[in-house]
Image 1 (tube, rainbow, N blue to C red):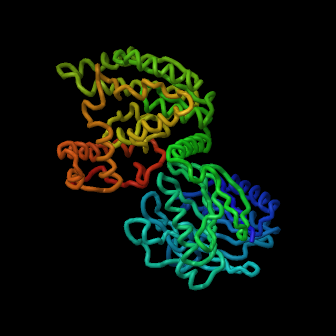
Image 2: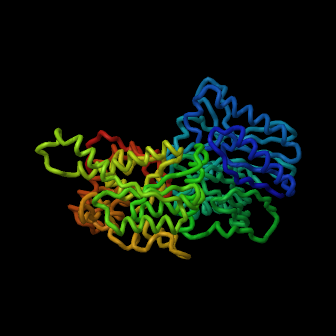
Image 3: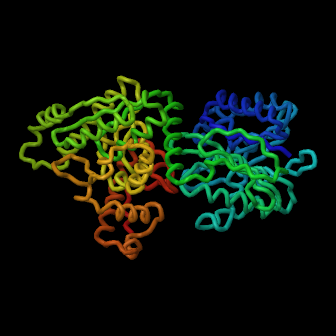
Length: 546
């Protein structure tokens, strides 16, 4: 049998645009000899639709779009994800469903059995689960249809078993000949191997081939990497499609030669590069922007952000702005200029000394008798935010924030200052990983000025300021943050790992204290297992200390 897999880049809510992508891919798969065309989870409405589902016309409109698409399913059947209304009086109002279309109509509907409610997922808020997966007969093949989470039941995946129902066990008992999984599985580092294990183990468990069709593209903070794959009944991967690219292929299940895209098993740094480029490009274009603005400090954070922007949007669509204060060092000014020249982006100097002085003069009476402190330092950052946002408004260009995960975690950033902007490109990239990534970007030619990588990091808000004046070295800080934020460890457990207890207590205190900043931060692109954003829901007002 020849299975057509359409790994497409959908946009949430763009029913017309998504339908066009679907029909274009269907036509190509038919031309290439597919016996069945498979599309990702919720391909018609995009994933995740979240509270768009509660808009009165949204689900009926997506069902209408399905009906129009089904009229074109005349050459071969297609299997496509959509939202189905629940007409029963009990339960959630919708099903996360897949439609089997053939002969110009919808022949059968399959419903998702397992609904993820962890990390960035909240499907139990919207969908009613199916009792069990179902099958369909295509010629002499009995095909079991699953949707994303339905195959995430392997005992070695995750810290505990989340479900009492195992769709794969049910399908194995029904002696299916083929399992198809429609998926919208967002990427984070280390996830490719997990998914491959799930698919190959499912094939071994059910003694049949498994076809896994995944979404690609960026939607808000989530980045979908594609990497659709097919495993044969012995659990061997016989096809693995491209990472972070649209890909439409026909796979012959009887073919023994492997078809593995080079990007499927690429390096972590290449994954991060492609993920950030795709996430930024889709965020900018899907929200209607064409250009981006980056404030260039001369440091590594803004340099990496600008480099990603230039690759994602084209150098002609990126504007770099240097906003030096009286405290800014000459090498920082030089590094900002050199970066812009290396990238070939538009570049402007916009000194802020007069803006800062005017602000301090205005506040002088109310500040009389008060010592200078972080307040005056933050006026500089907020002056930059004021001017950058003005340029964003005037040029219609999206302002990109430049803070990394380490600094965002401990509040080493200024609300309404350097946190101003519409997207935080590297906010899920820890500082130590950022240095490694900058070296990777420079592997062929120098994009990031060497001095931006080698000089001690500094916010340059007071003379001779260094990050390590108030923070431990980033290798220590990042290890503590990973243990506390991503692994949920207590202060005592982290100190037992060999870290100074006073340092642990202070860094954990900073994380907890700055939750209010992160709630007001620009959305950031998720690349780690647990990012700041919808997947981490810590109250601002809370007094639990552990």
